Image (cartoon, rainbow, N blue to C red):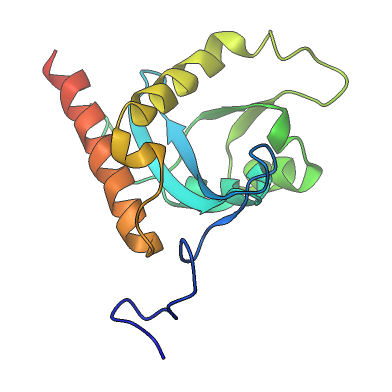
Length: 165
């Protein structure tokens, strides 16, 4: 028997949740984010806490909307992408290269993550702003679409605050 949300009564937390490897196996969700260099969110996504970060990169890059520029046609892809060591895979590098996106991905065991820090702090600051929304700190919604909608509302709030000041 299923309830009005389309889930059985014993199910907890709904789809796109998974055991968090750092929090004693509790179910949770992870927010994936691409920002511009000012910290405005361009693309958002959610996944289970046990999904690897590298699996979420392609849908996020595909989800970046066309950006209007002052001269010329709309830009359909970013010029450069900075990422941390979690995205250090050859298939991701090849995929970004095939789309014409220059990448700067720290290499595991070779480069220090400190060199990427001057670009990475912009994303970390935006994640911190998202974490400031109490509704996103703990996932209360069973449906993934509802949680993604609240993440989108929080991103709109960030954009509104950044663009009005």
